[in-house]
Length: 496
Image (cartoon, rainbow, N blue to C red; front, side, top):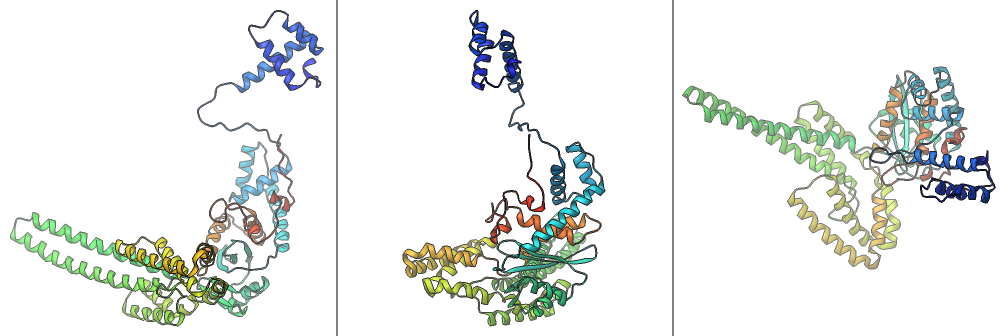
């Protein structure tokens, strides 16, 4: 019983263990320790035995490398509910949640219990989402997603990635989406693909602008460039193979056959190379209008000129046969005006900087930013790199002459404005790529499933990138507790 006394400090116990386990301890040490601490000799030996047991347990050899620390957890109702929520967030089905919890926590559950807990959590998430109504102060990206035959609309902020709306509706017409857009305070600019329902909804909601996604134009454009390049190289390879066969031939008949085939392949290769060169030139002219800044002036791209040139480039593809060319031609003829819908908003964002630092300095910094953006987009040839370096040096000299000591503060401000997402809905589609597996993994989905996904996405901090360490909810100015899951009625985890 002496080993359980609480009036003996830890340091005293350590000293008792050290002296008793010392193989060279003096005779009478046990008696002296017993008298000093008011214990019996048996209690001294009990404390020493307990210390030896602890040392043996914690000093046993382990394998190489870091070892996970042992930790005891208490499996209670709260931990089971939290585990069910996290497994659902990871895309685990309700049946598989039973298997996981039975194996990991040695707790058998039923599918009905899991379903009931998720229903409660989904209802709580819906209430929290309704209470959170941050003011939209950023461009919204929208995208439609169909799952289990039902349309879903996602609206996400392009700067914060906060989900402002994730709604399932029976129809995907313009009136349905227009009413949903009005519910979230009618954003100024909505970026989306060319979906007709969402485009009509933006029109009915009288949004200030509807920006079409440049990526939906450039991705198939450069994809076709790559295919034509592969075809040209493959044709040249066939020419070389036939030339090798010609050199190996020994008879006049074989020589004549290989020569005729070589001439045929050479003509085909020349046609494919010419086709690639022609389309590549068209692609480069289209891609040049993707830039925010005109490198010759440092100003924003001239919209009327851009619309006219993109339309003319679409007409150049009139004689090209094939579905991909028909698609690109249609885009170039119908999209140009809405591809530049972002410009009034970008011009408005740049006005305070122009007033503070002067138009000439901001124009020079705009050229610098665009040159670096062009370099990051794709590899450049040595000739293009040299030309870019020359332009960059000239723009830097101009900016330094205009701004002086304010050069770097102005550069930070300009980079922050131009670095925003102005021209696409790809961020909405990135969020949809996270949502799609959740919807595909469930035979039946409803609004509750979407509300829970929306809540979890908004409260989870980003692990990397420029938003690392902050959650979408925090980026829009919402206050979150240290454990956001407590907002759903869950208690914090308790460890033993």
